[in-house]
Image (cartoon, rainbow, N blue to C red):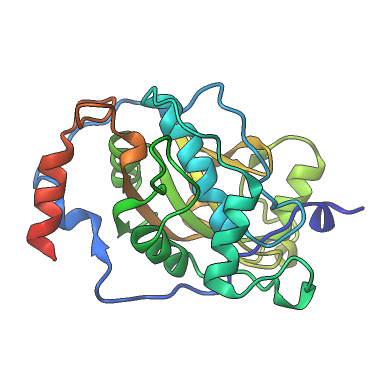
Length: 262
């Protein structure tokens, strides 16, 4: 079985733009905070497939990865998400059915984000669903803003047009995505397909992303070439009891800033 057959994708081609989508820069302070040179969330947390080895549910599985690492980082003890929880969201948004392969057609990141905001997935310990307060888009080529978003909000939810070279690099077991133009056809944006992921951290030279049961790295040059949408996701899963993130940012202040924009 080839790598392309082993790992499923599932982000629909292109990016859906909605003028109502918040812009991250609009509610951050005029002078951005200085993030650390490297930052990671959820160290040691298992990265699960959440069905993405069988179905094109990456847009939903990425939220499972986000919730897992954010809750570990914020030391919350919650009910573990299941693959069934993830697939229920995929089904609700797209009409997917496990018994009908013709319904497995992927999803747009924005549709899943809106569902997570309105409805959520799985169950918290108190019986409520995992929902997000808000999400805000930003230019993925703005590396400083990416670092700020990742550090402040527990990672970055993003979509990319994967090249076939990404499959080649997985096949080499290097687990490090980098730009390789030795074969222009295989390096073409989206030549493998669209994929959504949650970036769980960054360093000076790369981002760290969670997908397919593992953590991978991708260089910033790779991000510039292949990532076509990126979002800061503001979620209670990253807030400790008392309403603050592990970095000390205040939930109420963030919500007030968001309310002023709505």
